[in-house]
Amino acid sequence: MDRYNIAEYITIVKKGLVSSSGQGPAGMLLLGEIGSLLSPRIDFDDTKISRLCKHINEVPVEIVRAISDSSIVLNVISGFQTYVARDFNPITIDNACHRLITLINNEPNLHTDNKNLLNHSYLNDDRATFLANALIHVVGMTNTNDSIDTTYEEIPYLSEANNHCPLCGNDLVRNIRGRRNAFYGITKVYDEEFDDETKKELESVHPAPSSIDTKDNRIALCLSCYSDYRANPTHDTYQRLISKKQSFERNSEIDAALSRIDVEKSIEKIINDLGNLSSDKAAGLLPLDPKEIKDKITDDVILRDDVTHWVLKYYKFIEQQFSNLDSSGKTRFKVIANQVSTAFESLDALELMNQQEIFNRLSLWMADDLGYSLDMISVVNIMIAFFVQNCEVFHEISE
Image (cartoon, rainbow, N blue to C red):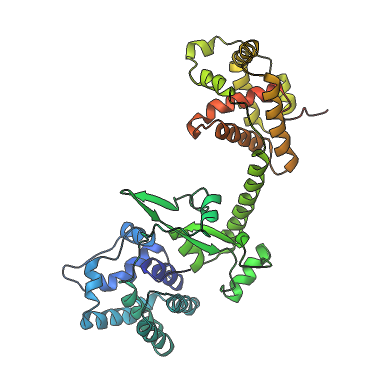
């Protein structure tokens, strides 16, 4: 649910301005009407506004205290009527005010008396007076999110995004000074609360879902992206969110396909040997003719070159390690090769990925099965390249 705080206020009101329609200029214009009245005055710049809009900082306590002074309040209203109103966009200002009063009425932490006062101002005063009153009431609202409570229903949305905002990549949950802090909101990708013009624009990109209350229509975003999207759900962002949800669904199918495969743990010995291989030993490995790789990987030059490089450098070493292990009865190469081939067939049958994506997914699967962190992925890539060369990972392209 949207929250009534200074970040949301700036994000919404900036859409109703002309020359100050950017986040920084809007914040400086709006908060400057209070800051300039204080002694000493408080000035805002792009950095300060950015930290407010990212929900990192609270409004300075001096400003929160100042709004209890009736003379300050009257001067703020006068400043909005005289200066801020000059920058109103006559086409969008009413829509911005409508979004703001809707947010105010949905805010659970705003007292009913204050809601009534703001609704009265919205209905009876000019837009400048309403926005001034809304600012006076919002500066004291909590702007940062220190909650550590993640509900059971929210966990799938954080998990599918791997705790990163699908739009900007910022962490959704952060550890700050030993405390777990939530910096996310769960939004509907398509919402009935969007105005009719917005819904028509979004539906031209992708049809509205049959049910807007399903998991497929909800996504976790960082607070900044959440605020931006709720205030201005553009068709570009809508398309990106649809694509992200489709990608999450695809990854879920891929995970299910790989979960049924079990790699022999003894392959860990070979990967460790590769990871510890000295540069002198690596330089002395015998190369292998990579023609077969060229026959298998024809549509991705970068992947083909990478696999060829790894095979040329490490193939003989891996082959010798398998041979040594087989002779001592520690493992069976054919069993492991068959498991890798089966994993490939499982992914290839989904028809959801190109060759690069399959290769990356096989590497991640093997690393996860062996308990490796991502800093070992380059070593695992070498092992997957070996199997591309040696067994049925990527079918040979027929002439």
